Image (tube, rainbow, N blue to C red; front, side, top):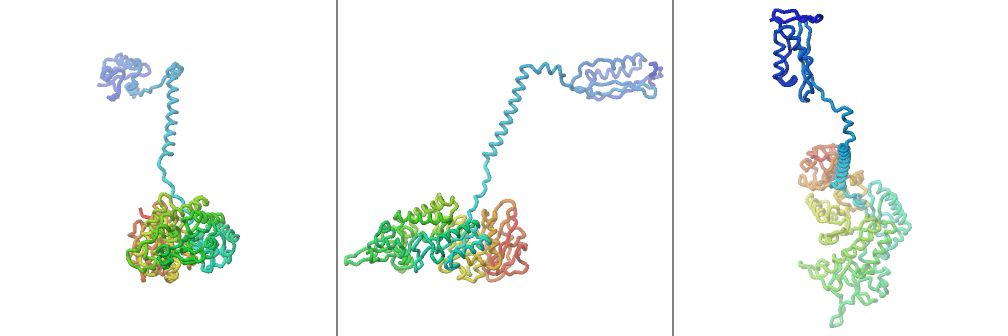
Length: 617
C-alpha cells in the first residue's frame, strides 16, 4: 500500500493508491500520557488509511493534547512531523522530564514559619554538638589510649665503661690526671673511679677520710680536676672503704683513750677470764686472713675487732654516731663534685657482738682458717642494708638521683635480693667473678655459663669487673688474650670496670666499641648467648625496632683458626659487616667494614670479632 503525500507549502494531500503512516516504535518502558494501552490506540489511529482529515486530526490531537502534570517517575512522548522526499512521516520520541524545586515565592512562604525556624535551629545546634562530641572523643582517645612508653634513659655510668685509676701508682699526682681525662674522653670513657687518694699510713690504710694524700696534691687540685671532668661531660667517683681505718687514725687513738665521742667508734670487748684468771677473746670470730679477729690493746685493756689485718680496726656501725660520721664524709666529697662511690668491704660493716660464737662449717677445715666458720654474725647481716640505705639516700639527694652507689665486691644472690627489694639500693652489682679469676684457657662453655648466670642473678645491668686486687687481668694471661677478653665484654649488657692499661690497646677497636655503647641495640637490646663450632662463644644484642642493626660478638676460645657459621643464630642475616677486631685477629680478606657471608666467617684463635647485621623479620 502506498502512502499519501503531504504538500508542505499548500497543506494539500495527494491521494495515493495506498496511503501508509510511517513511525518509530515506542520502547515498552516509556509511557505516553497514561499507560501502554492508550499508546497502542494512538498508534492504531495513525496507521488508519481514512483520508487526509483523519491523519490531520489525529496528528493535531497528539500535538495539542494537554498532558497535565507529568508523573515524576515517567517520561513524556513528543510527536514530530517530518518531510522526507515529499512524504510526510511521523516521529515519536521520548522526552525526559526534569523535576524542578519550589520557586522563590513558594520557598518564602515557609521561610518564616515557626516550625521550620525551630527545625533549622535544632539541626544547626545538633550539628555543632555532634561535631564537638566527635572532637572531644578523638581527644579522649589520644589522651587515654595506652602509649608506647619511651625507654628509660640510661645513666652515664651505664653507657660508659668505668676506668679505675690509682693516681699514686699510675701518675704520681692529680695534675697529671687532667691529661688522662682528655685522652679518655677521646675514647668515649666518661666515668673515672679514683682509688687511694686519701691520706694513708705506712701500712697503706686510711688515716683521714676528708683530705687528699699530700704526695698527690690537695683539695684545691682535686676540685680543679672535678671541674675539668665536668666541662668534658665526665664524672668522677671515689673508691672508699668504710669498714675500718688505720690504727693510726685519730679516731682510733682517741678511742683507745676512751675520749668521747670516739670511745665506741670501734668494736671493743673485755674478753673472757677463765677460772685460772687467763684472759681470752670474747668469742671464736676469725680474721679473713686466718686466726682470731680480736687483738688485745694494753693501753685500753680491752680487745678490739679486726676482720682484716690487726692494723685495720673495724668501725662500730651499731653505733649511730659512726653511721652519721661516715654520712658526713660522703656529703663532704659530694659537695666537692664527685657523683658517686664504689664502697669496699661493706659486707663486714655490722657485727653482732652480743650473738656469741659462730658455728663451724659442715666440712672440716683448719680451725684457724676463715672458711672453718659460718660467718652469720660478722658478714652480710641484714643490718648492713640499713646502713647502706642511709648512704644511698644521701647520694641520691645530692645528685638528683643520677649518682652512682655501688659496691666493689661480688654480692651474694640472697643479699642482693634483700638490698634491691622494692627500691634499688645497689647500682651495678658485680657478679662477674668468673672473669676476675679467669685465665687464658677459659672455655666458650665457661664464658656462656658465667654470663648467663650473672645476668640472671644480678639483673639486667651488672658490673663486669675483669680484674682483682691480687692478680689483674694482664698478669694472668698474655696481653693479646687479655685484650680479646676485654673487647668481648664491652657490648655485654652492663658496665665494664677496667684498669687504665685496658684502654691503651693497639689499634682503634676499643674506641670503636666504647662508641657503639651509645646505640639503641646496646642500651636497650635483648641479649642471647650461644656457642658455635664448640669453641666460639657468641652473644647478640638486638633491639627489635625498625631501622636498628643487631650486633654479634664472638670470642674464639680455641687454639686454632676456625670457619664458623653464624647464619643459624636467630635473626642474623645472610651477610654481616665487621665493626671491630682484636689485634690478634689475622684472617685473609677480613677487615673492619668488610662484609663476609654469615655462614662462612673465619676467626683466629683467642681473638674477638664484632659484626653488625640487619635483623631478619
